[in-house]
Length: 95
Figure 1 (cartoon, rainbow, N blue to C red):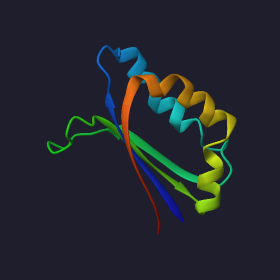
Figure 2: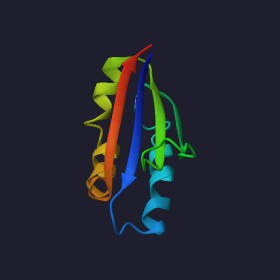
Figure 3: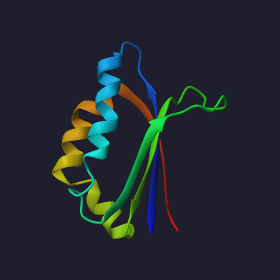
């Protein structure tokens, strides 16, 4: 199994409507991205979150499925509008 963990800091000026669009878009990958087993997203409640206010975990069958995810059209479409809104941090590892 391979885990993809991500945290977002919103850039200045991002609206609540833009923020609300992200979780459903990420959740919509379920059943669309081959090898994606599970997706969880949510707002960070940690007082130690360093202004990263949204995050998620995606479980893939293996590293190969995870790497194929980046070029999948659904992911490419998401990042086309998401990247201008965020400062992300990612952590990826095999379990």
